Image: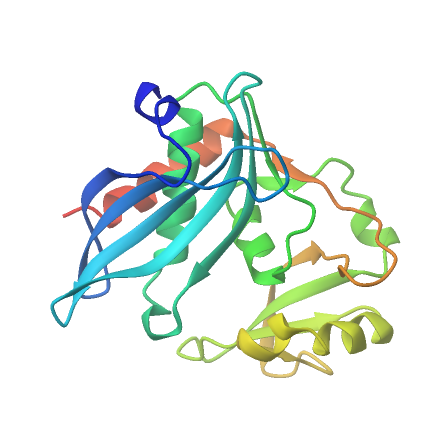
Length: 230
C-alpha cells in the first residue's frame, strides 16, 4: 500500500510480473490517473506484453480509491479487440479484488454509471450484488445475460424484460461495438444470470452493486490469479 500512496498523478509502476493470458507473458502495471474532474483518486491496473517486439497495453481495469476512507469503486474495464477471449477480464478483476482485500479496503463497490451489462455479470460471479434482491422482480431494466448452448460461441447474448429498454440500449455505442446480440427468446441459449442495468441517457434509478461476501471473493480471486501465474 505504501508504494501506491506515493504514486503521483500520471505515474506508472510495475505491480506484478509473470502473469500469462492465452499465449502472452504479461506484466501488470499500476498507474495513478490525472484528475478527471471528479476530484477522486483514480487508478488503473494495466496488462502489458511484448507483441511482435513492441511492449503493448492489452487490457486495463480502472477504479476510484479513497485510501483514507478505505473505499474503492470499480469504474470499468477494457480489453483491446485483438486480445479478447483470453480471460484477461477475469485476471484484472481478480487482481483488483486481491489488492483491495489485502490492503484493508473496507467498502468495495461499483460506480453506478457502469455501462456494460456483461461486466456486471462478471462482478456478480465474484459476489457483487445489489442490497435488495427483490429489485430483480420489480424493475423493468433487468437484462438476462445468456450464452449459446454451443459454448464455443463467445457472443454475449442479452434477453431484455422491457422493449423500450432494449431499443434504447441498441442505440448505444457499447451495444454496437462490444459484441452484444439481443435475443427475442431463449431457444438454443441459456441464462447465466440477471443484472439490473439502468441506461445512462434516460431517467435512471441507480443500482448500487457492492461486494457482499469478501471471503468468497478472496477465494475466487486467488484461484483465478494462480491459473494465470507462470
